[in-house]
Amino acid sequence: MVAGFYPLAWAAEQVGALLHVNPPISRRTLAFFENDNAFSIDAARRQLGFDPRVRLLEGLRHVAQTPSSGATVTSGEGRLIGS
Image (cartoon, rainbow, N blue to C red; front, side, top):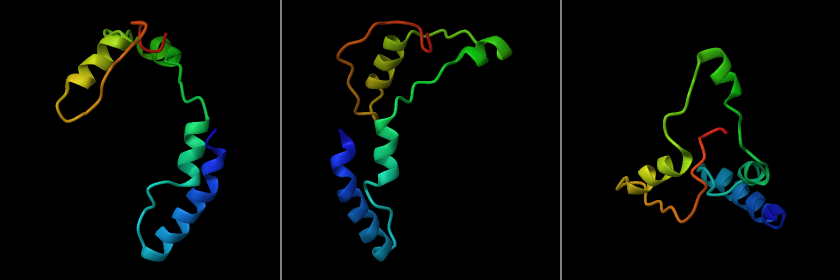
């Protein structure tokens, strides 16, 4: 899906290099969004005894209510974070 944006990202990188600024988009940024970046917290549970106190939807709502976030929450499962 994001593969079509790679030429744009390359061009932004070239312009950024010429102007000595970080480009607003890069091939590395696009690669990040192409991957499933969900991580397991099983090691934290086993090794540290971590037990999430906030369900995912509740945490997202809290972030959305933070004035500086500008985020909105429209749906969710309400499952535990990392489950």
